[in-house]
Image 1 (spheres, helix red, strand yellow):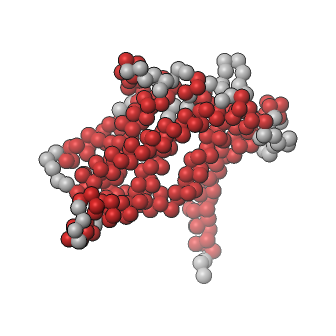
Image 2 (cartoon, rainbow, N blue to C red):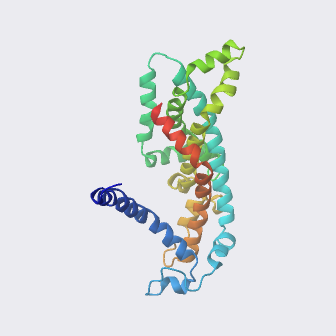
Length: 278
């Protein structure tokens, strides 16, 4: 039986810090959800209601239908899905090459891939705008798909290399003895074992493409092509803010990420553990 001192130590070193961390993290999300169900009059009044007194769905209807969040949602989802597909295909192949082959300058090459993550995105806006403007891709989802893929591929390739390094080479050698080609061994042996890593990399890429704001704002000047973050920013006017619709739009933007993490949680935890081990 644990002694009273051990129980007190556990409360002080585990339960209290975990509770405070959860409260610090979840309170803004709770307050956004709480605000999204309040009428505008209840939101701006001086007294604070920790639960909606007169709950309403009007804010969600306004955000989805009147403000155009249905279109923004579709734009963000399209860009995020295509970005994930491109990044996974290229990073799996690049990660396999980094994990399985030795070549001159390999460490320097991997270091350069990681160093690309230290380049401030704001430095790229002007040259990227000039390039895509000359290509006629301003306000085109393809421009954001290409940029997001380019940004994510270096890190995801190194990440995937760590996953693949954790898969024993002997399995591929055994498959080769059984008559499998390199691509067959990759498809039939490596891919099934790599599933947690693929899920983790896909989720990481999806969240970046879903939440990215600065590049989407600079490269999109047609309202019908706005992504969700850009659409949310344009709901804050110079003289007034519709707090209820803004909160409802934020909740709508949270839903895909929550569903994604709920569905992929097991693979995500296993995948990140494999990356650290690799």
